[in-house]
Length: 149
Image 1 (cartoon, rainbow, N blue to C red):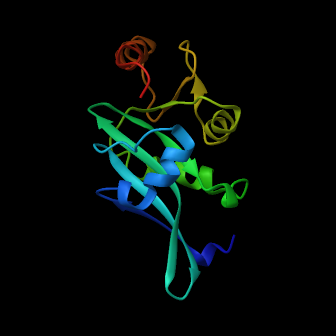
Image 2 (spheres, rainbow, N blue to C red; image 1 turned 90 degrees about the vertical axis):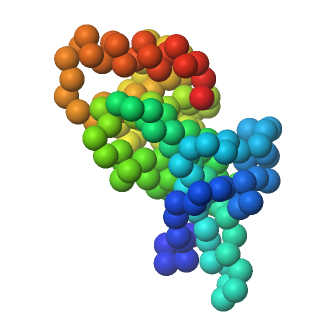
Image 3 (cartoon, rainbow, N blue to C red; image 1 turned 135 degrees about the vertical axis):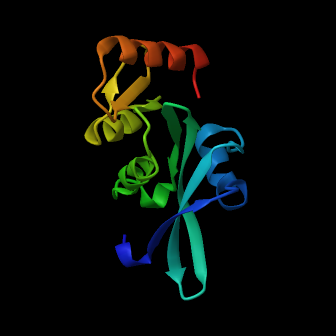
């Protein structure tokens, strides 16, 4: 993939761009509420194709990230990792980022960029600030109570 032809940008509404890709990946429509990031690839002088997606939901002290999907033609080229790292740019003063991962590929990407497994199956966390264990446990319990996102 030619990096000069790749643009990852934040959009207010992502369904217009990635509805089909998200549907193929997850079997449902993309979420409407969180912050959306779409990766576009310049196919030629006037054709831009949405080839990837990721979202971030800000929840006070932490953020929930997910929905990672990449067009099959662009997988295994580092785009999933680039999209996953996007949440770091907008983390602000968040204490942690949480991700639910449901497959080995997503799990591997999350681990490479610093997420660790929690006691909850499929739930991973990247602590962005050093915190006492009791505060980590409080935040983790809050996220577990939300359920899969």
